Amino acid sequence: MFRANRKNLIYLLVLLAAFFLFFTRAKSFVPFKFAVIRSASLPIRIISFPIQEIKKILYYHRTFNEYRRLKEEADVLRSRLVGLEEVIRENTRLENLLKFKRDLVYSSVVANVIGREPSHWNSTMIIDRGEEDGIQPGCPVVNAAGVVGKISEVSRGVSKVILMTDPQFSVAALVQGPRESGLVFGSLSGICRMRYIREDARIEIGEKVITSKLSSSFPEGLLIGEVIALDDPSRRSNIECVIRPSVEFSQIEEVLVILKQKP
Amino acid sequence: MRKIFLIFFCVFMAFLGEFFLFNLAGRWFMPNLLLLTIIYFNLAFGIRFSILAAVLAGLLKDGFSADVFGLNIFAFVVAAYMTTFLKRYLHYVASRRSRLLLVFFVITVNILTLSGLHVMLEKIDPGEIFRFVFIPETVVTLLVTSFVFLQLRKCASRLFV
Image (cartoon, rainbow over all chains, first blue to last red; front, side):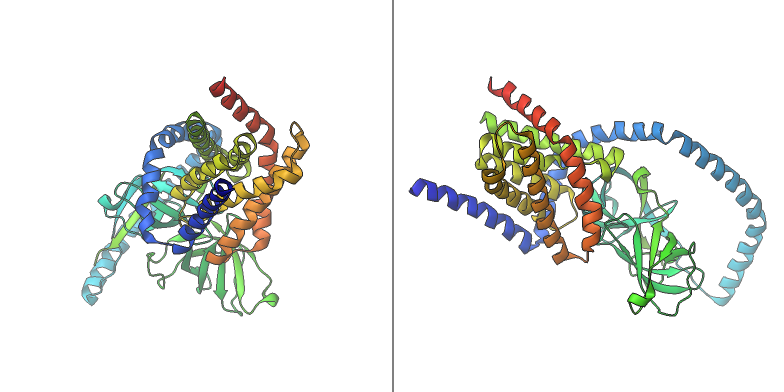
């Protein structure tokens, strides 16, 4: 009798301990989380290698088409650059004349993606750079296509990135054409939503969304994505946009972590 | 001791399996292998070993997650308890249909627990939970249930023969 009760008590204690762990929400568990990642990192790195190779084969045609498009784009841009160099020189001269300083240079770190967390609830990935490289929680993570996410937890040599499509993610943003500002949030569906836009804002489908200068962690002007739908404004007091991220998250291999702005 | 080793091994392999499928094919091809392992150990060895599997699975999930630590441990431990409760009414030995029914209800309980905890932490639309979590997870997990249970049974029988 006592033994059976003792067993039940132990089972109950396990449940209560798990409940307690969740509700304490202590930051002190972060090193423990990274210890779990470190202990499992070797097989995960081994698994990640064939995944990347298989993906390269699967996406061969898409990559080749992308390469051709980018090559054509690069040729056009190179021809435009000749004219622009003169404009840049003139701009610099005028800026110096006005003693105007702009924070356009950021120090950054290139990181390789180890893998994405297998979950329906979160969009998180692990990268192979950490505190040793100057990365801190909240640092913006980008790639050539635009905003990827931001750093959520950091250990010595590994960091976790919350992707833009995670429900915990938010960033101040601007619809590029009409200059309407709002907040971009992630969602479970893998796309983003832009909320808190003025009720009478005129936004068209296909317009680009970029980071706003109101954002405390992201530099201004980084591409987030494009508007693919507008939610019915009659149901709420302000407009809500559905945004398709510019980054293809399943194909990311390297990212750039922006450390801090240089004065 | 051999049972504990088996549980460690199977839980870790289930996690690696989930990691592989998710990174290769995305969320629509990722069954909840960890939950299936917990249910299997509950049916095969009883609640004690199921709780051990649940704690280990939760540790792995929480370690890789950016969420609050303990969220997955709690959800999996609840699932282990619910399996013990539900198997009394739903599960008949050697009945495939009853096994699938049990798995379906445990997945539902697991998703409801996680939904409750996530709604406390962030703003999530219940409709999205149904469309993007419940449907893919339930369908894919039920499709692979028989195969996973068979592999786990083979694994267990090799170790104990």
